[in-house]
Length: 106
Image (cartoon, rainbow, N blue to C red; front, side, top):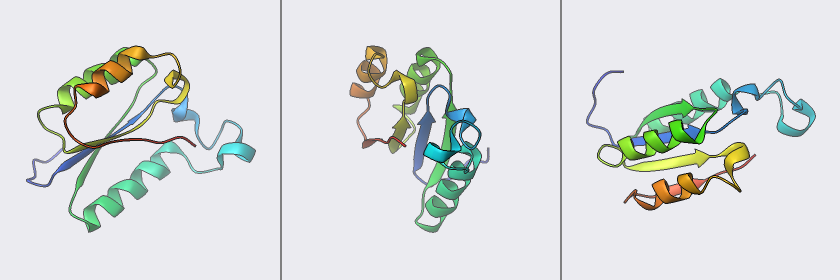
């Protein structure tokens, strides 16, 4: 990814979100995770942000991404998926981030 001076928003997606568009489309719709991320990137570009994305099946990968974001990202948007209720490590990691954090759910 090219280096820019734009503020970075990190979008994190938890377990099973890679199956969007395939798994229960009657509930979650037919848009894939890539569709959602591409739309976020297009919107961010229009308003002066860069977006980085990560989809992970484990809490550990997400925690590492949050730790790495502390010194370089302006904000985090996270859909923890199945980790919402039981991944205290995510909550602890997010508590160390000094920028805005938005938790979303489908």
